[in-house]
Length: 171
Image 1 (cartoon, one colour):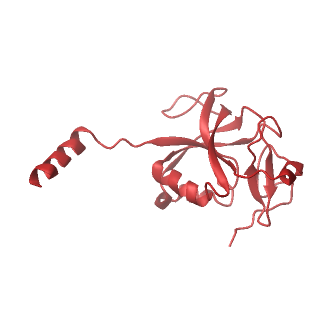
Image 2 (image 1 turned 90 degrees about the vertical axis):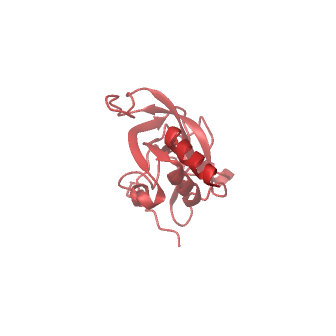
Image 3 (image 1 turned 30 degrees about the horizontal axis):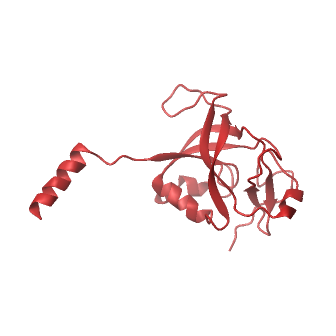
């Protein structure tokens, strides 16, 4: 027992825990200035660091649906618009929180997507060059009902946008 404790201490000093960070693209209510952004800032949920603004390389339909006016990115590449949003670097705790918050995999699924960086300066650590392409995780609606493809699509989401579909907090 005493030997295993000493070995554990030696391993933790020689081989410190590697913190994994995942890039995630936010296009809806979790962006800066949107109704759920406070969740990204709450360190009880984990850590999230803004990296850059970006847009999808491929076009995707971004629709607003449900009685709560929730923005959904539909996994239908080639339709809709190049969708604009923000790239965050999140730790595993935040990724786990986001999976739970987004009700993944029931409501959303997390997939990889190609993005074009829009405002990177590339000068500081973890910053990206404008125009560079990177792959990130993104939450897309799990089920794409045919009627969703009949809805208007948007290139940017803002709860106070011209669409008049202000986000309502689900109960």
